[in-house]
Image 1 (cartoon, rainbow, N blue to C red):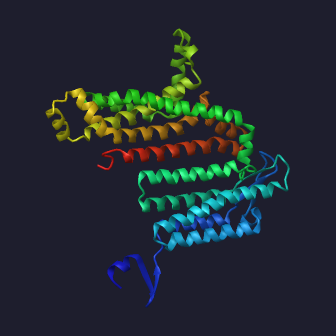
Image 2 (spheres, rainbow, N blue to C red):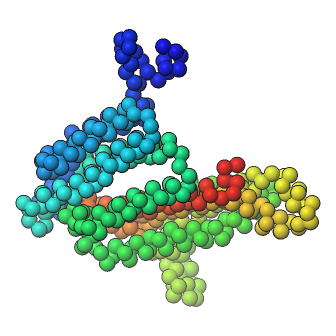
Image 3 (tube, helix red, strand yellow):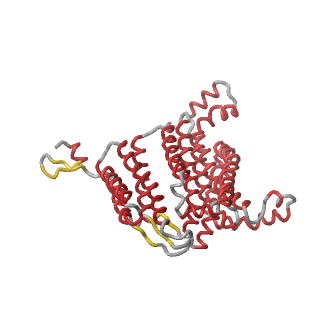
Length: 398
């Protein structure tokens, strides 16, 4: 056996080669195997009753259980021993799709024997299998090295599949959809608040952070103090920062004419918005300065040689070349703000965190998920879309 084959395989006996298991496929395959042994669904007699775990063959009709088991075992084998990325993508993707449909089938089957107020939720096996399959799919996509447009296409296809499952009512019997039906009006209102806080604070951070980044790029004397101050703000725990803003904003609301009329108060969206803005400044300022520092001096010298003045060089040459790094800061801020906005509900800022904290207070797991899952989906979508946008920009690979 030559040296290259020894690096990828081991020999049990002459003429019979056992492929070496894939380094990521082995732990993910093990997790998937464990997931098969855990409950697929949980059944509760009512919203807050203790859950009764249901295994794969108790939670599904026999045909569905056998099909899901066969797909999962096949995916484990592919994850362990198959090398072509296309096959490594297809197997977990099909199994994940089957799993998503099967959990709806399980809910309908279990609810058929229960009262209207009974609840069926995904069990530990569902979540663990979903996690392992998602990692395998992500790993296969990375190995395929797709371009940004193909990545967006894959994301759109996944979103369309989930949308189709929702639109066809496959998940209507699941407990989280029951929670949604009970909070439909407030769900969209709080969703709008969530987006206003996350995107609004991002917009203001861009408006303030880019000029500050340009300023400290041109003045080394200011760079240290500005970045140190913004780093200090980042170290303040979010809940503490929300609390620290209550007193000054209450004073502004009481003493500045018109402040309370435009929504500035000690609690509510105003302190949440200010806190998110403050947290957003460091990534925006640091990335703007880093992007401008990365522009080659020969490029700026050539622009100066063409007669461009300082402001023209900045707008026409330096900022376009620094844009991929600046947009990376935007991506960091947006994903960070979507997650942090959840905590704003503690001070009346609204957003999906409202359902999370209501669920914690009522020990209602489904209500927690009603707030947590849209937040995760929004953050994931923002990261995928902005990553693709950054990759299509000129100079992004430099």
